[in-house]
Image (cartoon, rainbow, N blue to C red; front, top):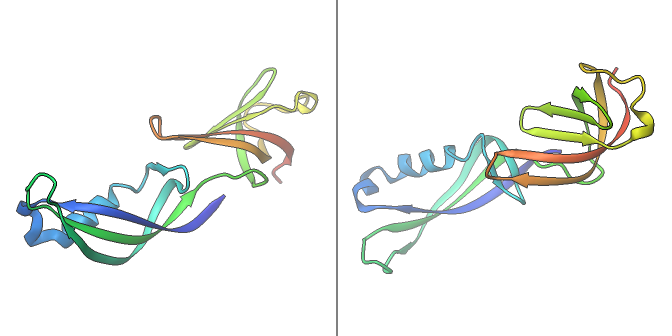
Length: 150
């Protein structure tokens, strides 16, 4: 569920920032931390390191003089995939079990296993399906209860 991944982006540096382009690019990269970046990457927990910054092109579309840089960097990201197992704390129990830990909102649909589970229990969940929502900066998971956290 937590993975290291290499991300490649293009950063457009306007002429007033060219004298500090490196700091400008690092700031743009750091702004990705703590957000749901993409469906492939998921939630970026931290930026590990910047691998490369390469000038690729001069923007000629609007004659602005912007310079485009290709930036490659490694991130630690959270992106639950079917079959992944993780721990969470139960927030609500009704006809379903609900958990909201940080950015991951989880619904467990095992109605037969709800008995004996109460709010505050630490449980282990296997991911059945997940959905990334960039607007709300969350990851929704439908999972299957596989046990209690010891």
